[in-house]
Image 1: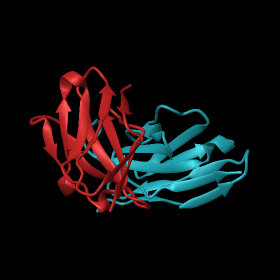
Image 2: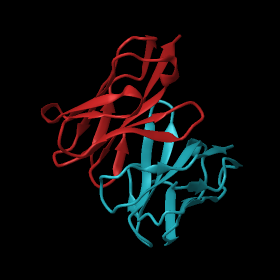
Image 3: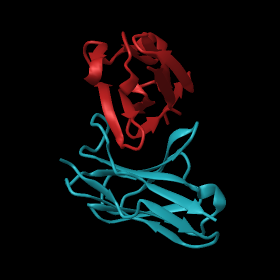
Length: 114
Length: 110
C-alpha cells in the first residue's frame, strides 16, 4: 500500500515561529499536495508540486512556502506562524502528472499557533 | 482554476432513508470527478470517481454518482443509508490539480 507519512500528528507553536511540516511518500509519485482543512471550508489547496524542485501555488499560498528537493519529500513552511494558520494540514500524493488518479492522503498534522 | 460547490453543509437522516448530496463545479474543459469520504478520526478515502464513459458510476459501500455535463453536476446518491455512513463527504474536481468542495457532514440516526 502507498504510504504518505506526515512527521507530526500534533504541533503547538507560538506566533512568529518558523514552522516546518514534513511529508514523505514511498511510492515514487510525481505529484504532491498540501491542503489545509477547516470546518465548513473543506480542503483548500495551498501548494502542489509535479516534480522535484517544481512548485505551483494553490488557492491560499499566502504565508506559506514549500520545498521539494527530493521526489519523495514535500515540505510546507510557515515563515512566521500566525494564529489564523491554526488548522489541520493534509499532505497528499498521486502517481501521474495530470488529473485522473486519486490522491493518497497522510493522516494530517493538527497545528495550533498560540 | 476550477471550483467546487457542495450545497449542503450538514444533512441528518434516519437509517434506511435515501441520500443525495449535491456537487456542482465550474470549469469549461475536461474534468475528472471524485467523491471522497472521511469517517471520524480517519483519513480521506476515495468513494468513487468519474473519468469518462457511463456517467453513472458506482463506488464502494453502495454509493453511486451521476455526472450531468450540461448541469456541471456530480451528485452522490445512496438508496438506503446506514448508521455507519455517518461521515464527512467531499466532492473534488481534477483539471490539472485537485480542488475540493467545502464538504457535507452526514449524520445518520440509528
